[in-house]
Image (cartoon, rainbow, N blue to C red; front, side, top):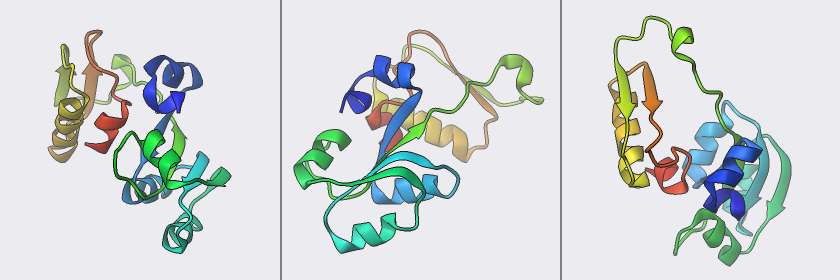
Length: 141
């Protein structure tokens, strides 16, 4: 639960929580999860069976809602490694770069990142006054 709710814990463990069956399945194509939490429903367990995870757990609906930080939730929840930050020197001929500062709303940050990805921007720089890009609301957006 701390991993989902606290930025300092995400930073120290170098992991974040992703919630939602579709998002977990998409990330599962390229990543191995540390923990995979699934509800008791057979459909979700079937979806989870195709994913790679170090640990698998069946969790009650209340626990999944708390971890996903949603009032209504029935889906998969997983933990995955944070991506390695890219240094400016490592960027290969970046022409479209987004620099973000003073973004305090994680939902807005998620929307900006999704738009930058859709328009094929090559890099995003988070300046010190930005909300955590691995905040659960940002990831959901």
